[in-house]
Image 1: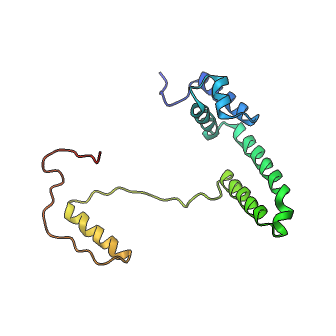
Image 2: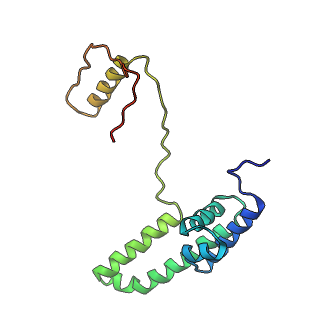
Image 3: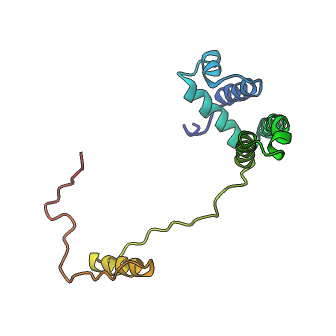
Length: 159
């Protein structure tokens, strides 16, 4: 039996249809109605699933279409922007920002997040004080008190 998080052939076909409808300019709401998704978010997730799959030839095509649309928009305002029209310049910058996002040029540098487990709360407090000092905050000295994380064994919530 296939894993539930892997789209079955019928669902993959429906996702491909969702992408085709999106390429044709369909809204996510219209795609949802046409293909039987509960709402626009289902259609959005279907298109995203196809775009995230390696076998998607439609993803490159969609980027090309969106790039062409952005080129058309930029061409319409370029002359005015270069002549100093402030609103045209702002619009051109917005188009540029969209292009950067479309091609993933503004992706942050890879950040590695690691979880370490200190041997004790006191060790954690010392490490935290050192980190604050490195950031330029006033010196924080952890006290020598013993910490019992949850003495009652109760969980609490801020609700």
